[in-house]
Length: 101
Image 1 (cartoon, rainbow, N blue to C red):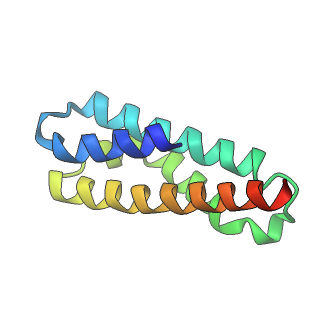
Image 2 (image 1 turned 60 degrees about the vertical axis):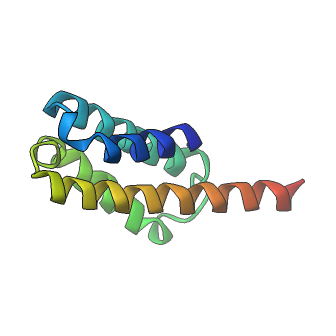
């Protein structure tokens, strides 16, 4: 996940140079990471406590092309929010791992 966070940050610095395909590919990578987190980390959590991530996954899945076609400023805001979310999920995952061991 740390690599994805770095890639999001790099995409933000070269935003104007990113093609729609590159933007879409980045959103797909973010979506894949969310799905992986949902399965591997939250797999044993009751479904009613995971509604937030399930809704996010469904929303992103159905709007990939719309997100990739956003104006630079809007796309940058989306990337900023995903960066914060990934950092939070990464921190929670590492905290749980340390607690278990």
